[in-house]
Length: 444
Image (cartoon, rainbow, N blue to C red):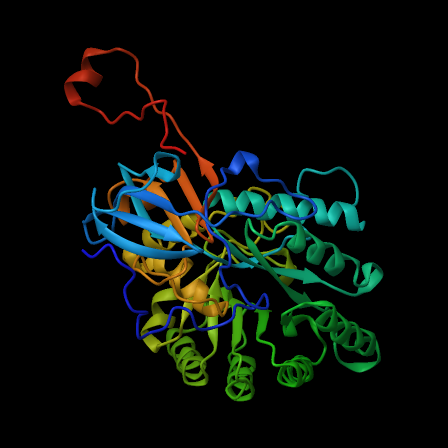
């Protein structure tokens, strides 16, 4: 394969601005994760190239991948793309994939399940939680996150300000965007919520959210959200259990014309509806172009109730609904053991949701990025260098046992997790040639 920079693909991976106000990769790789800092401005990467050597692709090829300027510059057969030793990462034994994205996080409430007493919502505490949660999810591989943030009540816009500050401090490590989530938008009580929602958008919230199920007038809530979204050109991402087919029908009818797009989730209630009713609702959502984000790992606290079942992913996909998967709660009231791991969400879709491993992984990678308005990623020249290397030789193995991971954001290594498995010196282990992982991990 040619070592030179090819023409840009006709599908234009350069096009499209992410919901964070543009994710154009302006920097190249070279800095190791240990030298990055959080809080204030992230360390600026320099413009050198990075070579990923000996990576396995999902089609079975073993290749070298050269990154520069935040993009994949070239892909060639193993050994065909020379690079200085200091900018070379040996990915022998690793599967190289487009990085996951997290479409449904809750950074303001994350990591609060083990606390004693009321949860603190001081700006410093919310910023600390949102930052730590984003870094945990980055370590799992998610190089872009969409965080739903509650506004209103006694805390006002404080949590939104704190998460936006976390976003600024994480720039260069991960792309964090925010969804403003008001509680009420109708009636006398909703007037303040609507005013605060407008202020949140002016502050920098790039997506408008909320939960129509909890408003006394769900239709009025939806009307207010769609009107404001249309006014500001923002996408919409709403919480709903999806157990009311009439409400879903109205939502589909109202949301179909919104250009930036409408996403709903987690829609576990669809699984409790009769099959014919759920199928009709899915057809209506598909016709309106409404996406669904399911939460295979469990609901989030925003709905203030627990659904025992996840959304019927196969039914939705069969109807033509674009389905993505998120993590939801990360060790908060919604799920005290939530991991925030996109590969676990994909694993659950493959093991319980009836999807093939490749389809399951796409739900947390390409489908998630598309739902978040991010440019497409492929392991091909010209595409953004948003990549995840996982020890394994195929998707099924990666979803089964994804321990060691190397995360690449904007063309540089930003996180690394290394696992070592060893067996005692027994004749059985030697005779069976059981897999071992050495203590050394690929550089730099």
